Image (cartoon, rainbow over all chains, first blue to last red; front, top):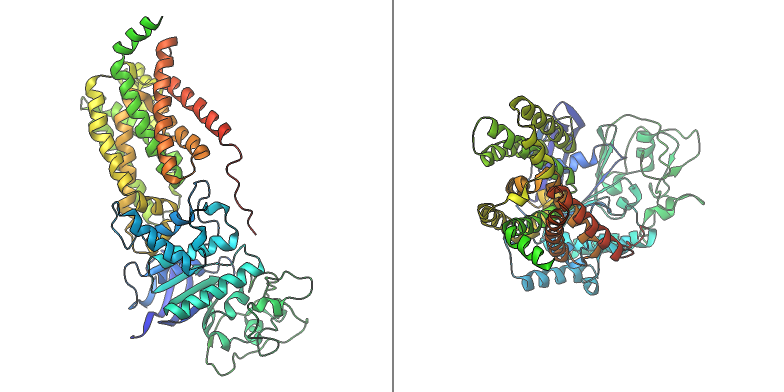
Length: 304
Length: 277
């Protein structure tokens, strides 16, 4: 159990009388980056809430030896912050300090200094006084990362961090997250329905499909054949299986997108009639389960 | 004419002060409800408190005690509901249930006990013009300290209201803070209900915040503006009621509404969010 933030054995997550994902077994090593991928409604958020201790598992076992109060930094989806109120960027970041400091009034100067340091870490030091609602989508997400960092977390959880961002903003944000993880030794969980965002920026992958874990293991162990076995023969993802995947690309979507298709797809249709593969993997020993189902997933990764 | 006004002001001195404190209290408290997007709660709590008042009077108990017991039960139910995901209905539905049940219950109890006039006054008109020095002391002694407590916990309350999921993930105990917030709002409402009436209570929770959001440029400013607008709206309503012999509660609502419209007009074009990519 040492060296892991969390460990799940045969876990079922969901709500009483309504299991959402079954058979979840994995370890989340400290310092690792886990990608949690699946279409809308596949149970990503439910699994995430269970991992964070907000929901008890319905069955199986979940140990969280790395968890400590205030040790989680959470970056919500864009749009989760009410923009009717005139929050400055500093106001937003100071919310991240709320768990570490007294619930009562604290010295404003100390809070401000800590918020400023967190903003500097994400390259927004000069934006502290601006209204949050006036920032671009990419800057808003970086401000929310700063808010999470202000709490000095061990685990950084990002819920669809690139949703609504353009390609440049996505690349900037993902590069920043890589750097923060390296520099601070953070364990991260990135929830996304865009597979391409996760491929280059995580080292462990949990792929959810129809209430089950369809793939789990090292991210580099995922092959195009795995995806075709899970989602059907029409799925093509040339960024995988050593075809055109380039480590120089910030976002696998660029390699995967067909001309004229949405650049954020990361998953495109292949040639009809391609046979699904029965086995997974290129020696990295991932485990793959789950039914084969036709799943075009043109714009958003598997099933979105 | 000025002499008449001075006479009126001195005669209704306590009423004006009660209106001023009630407007200040409810205006500031309403900002938390705006932040939580729980404004329907601002409509439901006065109705529920009103039912408590009417029930207590029907069984000859102190009115404030009846209101406190009924409101505490309702808040307990709400926070218990909010804690679970498996109830099968939303928090908004639970608030709506409380609102409609309390309203129907109030009308039925007043009909059964022959106190329709009093019930109507409590729910619609309020009786601020008959406020006394004791009413003022109660408001200042209980309401303002609660508001101060909430403002001191403002940072956590803002986070919990704005992003409860993050607060939970960070290990902050969300439920006690929610209870403190709901209870604070309930205390403010119970203290002002008899004076302002349920309708004006809701109006003073809702309207000053709406106006403040249009003109304030900081979150702290929203609280200050809302408290100020609530105070001016309430006092303006009482003044209008005195001048034109109107029911005070609706006059406070109309005065607050006028201030809100002015603020929205003054603040037009201020809210220009960056387009989402």
